[in-house]
Image (cartoon, rainbow, N blue to C red; front, side):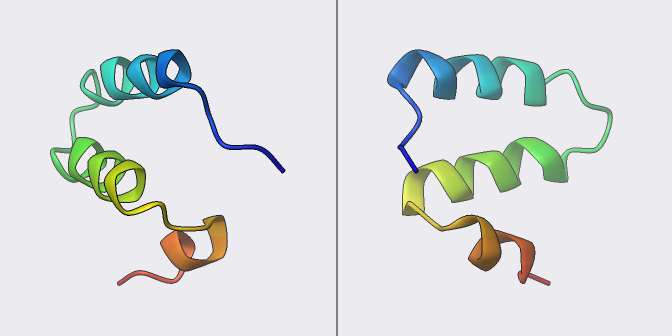
Length: 45
């Protein structure tokens, strides 16, 4: 496992902003800022 690079996170932010659901960019920001693992992020409600 490796952490994403800063460039990869930037690309993810820019592509998440194109989504019609405003929760997607908020979710991406939360996961990136908190350092959550994949399982933790998937278990959010």
